[in-house]
Length: 101
Image (cartoon, rainbow, N blue to C red):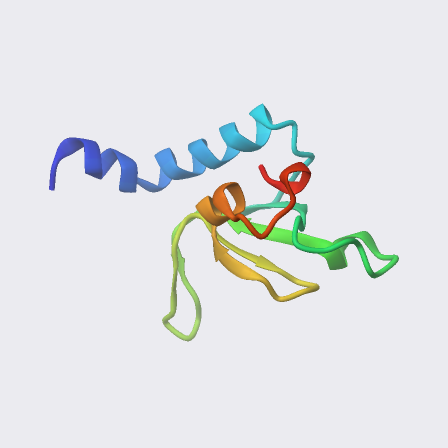
């Protein structure tokens, strides 16, 4: 594996990239111990409680209790159930331009 690819796959580099994109796009976010929360761009808030329409982006590679690997950049919305990888939030053509990162 080349040095450039290793740097790209490194967890710290990927999480730093995610945070840099969020900050450059002025996306309000809340840090958690191993993830960052943003408002889900795939739907309008449907619940009065703020946390229900939050999208969680994983910043630390980890294994769940069931042995499933969770890579850096994996996202999941707790309201609409949309899930995928961070680059989808940037490139998704389904999203209106004003909701893309």
